[in-house]
Image (cartoon, rainbow, N blue to C red; front, side, top):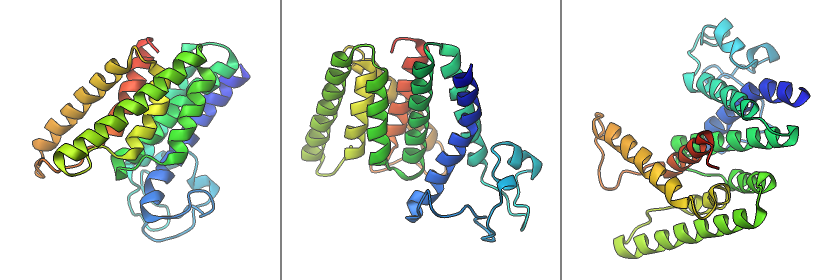
Length: 240
């Protein structure tokens, strides 16, 4: 019961921290030490401005000091993280396993958001994902083989694409991400993971192609986001 309450209570705060990552990393700002402040007027935010979901609702999505709108993605991330925590609890298991599952899902959310916002997969997050997945793996050997196979396959794909096209198609962040995702799925389900990600990326590309800024052959796509979403889908389906 204690772990259930902890996970459910922590979820929105995790989503709030993911929003901090997305907003600060592109600017090179510290995500831990720097105090939270309004992006428009620079006023330092107090504790009552930092309560996930509730502060946004009470302020009607605007800064209390200058009235500037608060970016809605901050609210969405808080709600998503809360929902992922609830899913981890509903999936069940021993308390430690529930907590590890919640952390795994939150890391997938953080990585997906970072790649979607800035085409970056921070090393600290990919390493943390791999560690958490290995800790919750029912078969450590199979998880290690899956992670190694995933990294090897993406490293080879990255090299072949670069040689064939003369430019980078996959970043090293995607290769490192596959350490955790491959460990989660195992070797047998790696094709399912990649196929799901490819279909999601294709759907995203079609949406972009219909937007005013049409897609070109050199338009970057956040494939790490698609991989994280595909992994979360496989977990939700119950096959990993």
